[in-house]
Image (tube, rainbow, N blue to C red; front, side):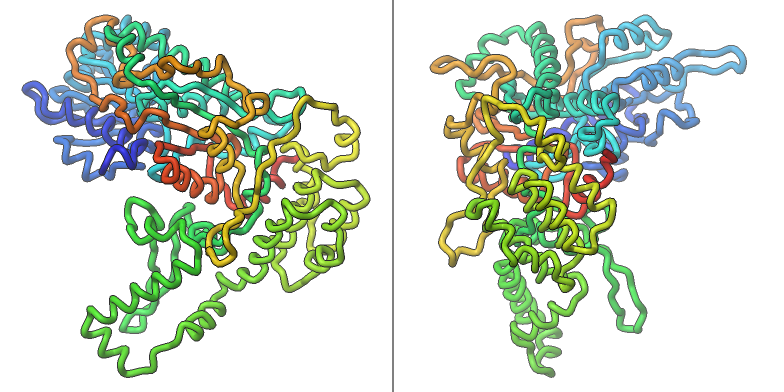
Length: 606
C-alpha cells in the first residue's frame, strides 16, 4: 500500500499496527492482550481483520465493557477512545480488591487513544492506582473512517442530517459538530499538515452548519498545534520547510442541492441509484448451481477488495459496458472450457445483450432516471417561466415514470427557481398525484437548506451583501465525449480555490488568510502523542512513527461537507487530484444517495 495514494487509510492502518506491534515484541513477555472499546473496535475493523491482529503475537482481543479473563502475567495493549468511561475501566483493571481478593488483570498497560486525551482525564490516570502499571501513553488520531483512498467519513451519530438541519435538534447538533471536528482533526494529524481553514457562508444572518463546524475545527486545530509547538524542539525549522499552503474548506449541504437529486451516468452513481445495496456497498444476488440449488451470492463493491470496481467506478456506463464485453471476450479466449461451450450456441450480439439487460428489474428505472439527468441541462439555460411549460407538467403527470423520479424532478424545479411562487408550487405539487403528505413535507423542508418554500419565509428574506454560490453546472465538453455532464459545486469550488479566484466574501477564512510570499504552512512532525514532555510514561515507550509530511503532502486540500457527500462529489475529488497533481481529499458526515436524501428531508419534521 503506497502512502501517497491511500494516505488516510495508510496512516490509520500504520497507527494501529504500530501500537500493537511495537509492544508485542518488547520485553520478556512477548505475548500481549489487546483491549478495545466498542468505538475503537469499529475503527480498527475498517482496516484490520481479526487474524491480522492475532498475527502480532496477540493472545486475545477483549472488549473493555465485558467481563474479561485476567492475564496477570501478560501486558495489555489498550486502544480506546479518550472518554471518562474508558479511563474508569482502565483504572478498575489495575485496582486490587480484597473482597473478593483480586490482582491486577494484566502485568502492565500500554495505552493508545484514538484521539486527544484531555488534561483532566490525564490527571485522573496519573493519580490513580493504575499509574504504576502504565508503561506508556500515546494518541493515535485515528477517529475517522476512510471508506476510499480519498474519502473519509466522520459519522458523528446515526442521523447526522437530522441533527444538522432539524429545528428540534439544537443540542444534538452541537454534540455532532464537536465530534465531527475531532475526527477531521484526526485526519489532519494523520496527514501531518497544519492547514488554514475557510468555510462557505450563505446569505443570511444565521450561523450556518459550515461556519459552526469551521470555528470548532479551528479551535481544536489551534490547541493541537500549541501542544505540538511545545513538544517539537525544531518546530520553527519544520515550519519553514514547507512553502506551500494546505487548506480545509468546510461546506454544508445547502451549497449544492442539485447534486443529491441529479441522476449521473458514472458506473458508481448508477449502481447506488438503481440498485438496492446492503450495508451501502454489498450487492446480493441469487445464482443457480450445477445441481439446481439456488445459492445466495454477495459481492462487495470496495476499492480495496475489487480492483475491477476501483478501475471502472468513475467511468461513464457506456465505457464500462464496452470494457466488460472486452473482459468477457478475453475470459472466453483464454479458457478452453468456456470457449468450447460458447461455440455450441450462437453468441448474442451487443444489442441482444442490451435488450436482455433492459429487462432486469434493477434497470427498468433507467428510462425515468435519464429524464432526471437531462433536467440538469436546464439548470443553467432556462428561466423560471420556461420551466412551467407543458413539458414539465407532462413529466410530473407521467405514470410511466417512477414515483421517486417524479419527486426528484419536482424538487429540482423548486431548487432552480429558489422556491418559486406559492401558486406555482401548489399547482405542481398537485400534478403528480403520487405525492404523499410526507413528500409535501419534504418539499417544504427544503427551506431548511436555504430554498424559500414557505410564503412567510420568502417575505422574511433580508437583503444580503452577497448571494448564494453559483457555478457552471453543465460540463461544456464536446457532445461526442461520454462523461458526466453535471458538475457538482464542490468540483468548481476546488478549481476556484486552487486558481485563487474563490470569493473570500462567500468563502471567508476563519482566522487570517495565508500570507503571500513567505512560508505559509506550519508542519506537524509525527502527529502522535501530545504528552511526551509530561511524566515518565512516554519516555519509556516508543510511539508509532508516522512519516513526516513529504512534498506530496504540501498544498494538501481537504473538502469537508457537513450534511452528506454524494458519489459525484467523491468522483470530482479524484478528478481534481489528477488534474492539478495535488493531494485532494473529501470528507463528510455520511454518504448520501438520491433516495436517501429524500428520506432525510422527510424526516426533518418541521
